[in-house]
View (cartoon, rainbow, N blue to C red):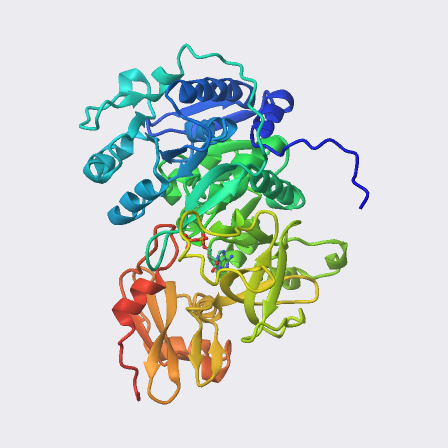
Length: 546
Ligand code: ADP
């Protein structure tokens, strides 16, 4: 082998903020705060506070490799924490406040966090957990001294006081690029949450992967992007790292994520692109219908986390002139794997042909290899027809879970690829179609029915606001689809209406055997439909004729 003679410089997240401070210095960072106002800073000033925070962390005994936790909304302080913690070689453990109590206690103990930075709005939540958290855990409240709340938390520190007086410059330490910088637990639909430990290298390379599609996903210098996807869940799909690289102007929404608050903020700040899960966009779309227009300046919405329903894509594009990009990924992948991208090969496509491709989860980023395999692990062709288990490989894909040998059993195949738990097909152009999660697919008499496709079709029914399809047991077929639907206010429908609406949209044998109407559907801590809860609630439903 002839070794290349280039510098072996480590890929570190600290170099991203240094770059932004240098090249994107004047670009604004806007944050709607818990305090109720809108805060403005710039990458240049943010970098100074990040340096102060890094010095403060060291002064409070945070060492290389220590875990430091956050319970915070999307805003400039949370952004500062990402860089200061990772920059000194510690690990930023972002906690999802919507986890159940037992899960919160589990993750903080499992990560063995040293410090916990929390918003004033989470003080009550944490007070209720303190007895079961590590005894030496220190609490830092994300506010100014005058806003420090009354609390029973032991010896709470104040964030702004912590920063005050610290040096605004820092020479970041250099260490191996494989050093961990972030820790994120999956919601754990079954069993305990599992930790995914990102490295500096995986994080920088994931950001570079996003750069390969930056323009198409609303990342351009000076453009305003609203990350509704939380900083407390899977690195907000990589945004905290890629925005400073590109020089995108973040408009962080803080705690208020209802349609009305988002619409107002987007209007005021002339947000051009917004990223989030479908549930959030249901709220925003309702608000857009009420106003009869889109928020001023809005050009693009990126929908991911669960399948973007076809009617939602159509409404954004046709009724409001907002371009939809669909993305897919998972915590274990840093997280973005694929997004809608088109190339010159697609110039001749009609609007409806382009829209049909947006139902797909898009095409892979640089650094994400995809394969689909059959039940015996043999590769299937990317012909758009064959479907099977989806596996991924790449420098920002997890190799094993954090301190959890059992959780990792069978996570990778014999060739070292990671199992995603999704079932998919891939077409010759590289468009990935997630058929279902393997545990959600309905196995009817040896054939598979995609719950996602059925939900998508049913959502086109004018009376249906939200719906889910789960498997109900059937004596003859093993499983048959059961549709559970929430109706729009003031609308009615019967099971037969819905079945006849679907009859020309899906194969006859896909038609749900029954439709149940309910007032609301359960969601997970990340805003997705909880099929687990639904199966508990309705899995024993006796189908007509069964
Ligand atoms: P959590 O379960 O904690 O929300 P993830 O965000 O890691 O964890 O979930 C990843 C899973 O979400 C994927 O494996 C896939 O099943 C589903 N998913 C994500 N994006 C999409 C999408 N665009 N379409 C369909 N499923 C998606």
